[in-house]
Image 1: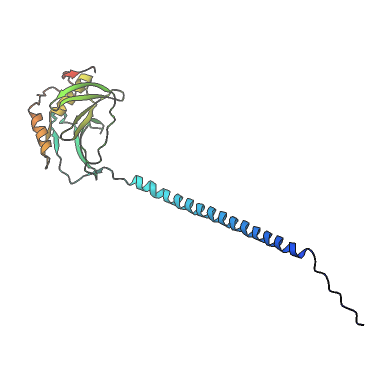
Image 2: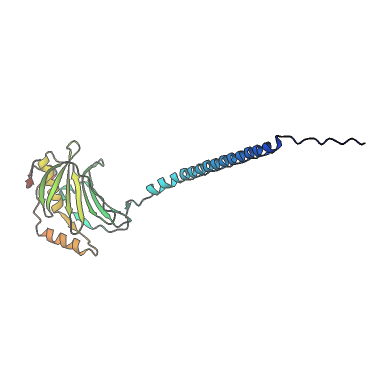
Length: 238
């Protein structure tokens, strides 16, 4: 009688080990997937930060390249101020233009050493219209353009002025730095404005009309406005 071969019994833990191993593998895959997604997010944020950093110089260059005033060497002077009291001084005339349509005519008088003693600025704004922050007001005078505001400048060695016209849009400003008294400087400003004349209006009919009407109100100015003590018509304290 041949003995029967014994059949080894299957281990009792086989059925429980495989699911546990599969669960651990799934958990590791899920963790690895989350880690990869996290690293990809960090990489995208880093790339975005580098891109924005690279754009910063361009932003600054765009801000610095905004259109500015430039000297118009080919433009014809539009105004003149016949100041016979300053015939011995150096006078300059400069025209500035803005790409958005504005124009500034700047007349300046200097003494022999180049120091400015008077300036007259006529600003005709375009789309770039610039607001002016005026210094402290110190009074008003009359001119052929109507009342003009006097402005206190610095230590009082110079006296500024400002006249704004709505139609046509026009701003006349400047300063006078010579004269022993404030009334003398006020008289100088009144005289300067009364002698301001239009040379070329171009196609601006309203500007021509403004100066034509102003000429009818022009007062005579015969005092030495640099050193004289004549007092103009004042409004308010000086």
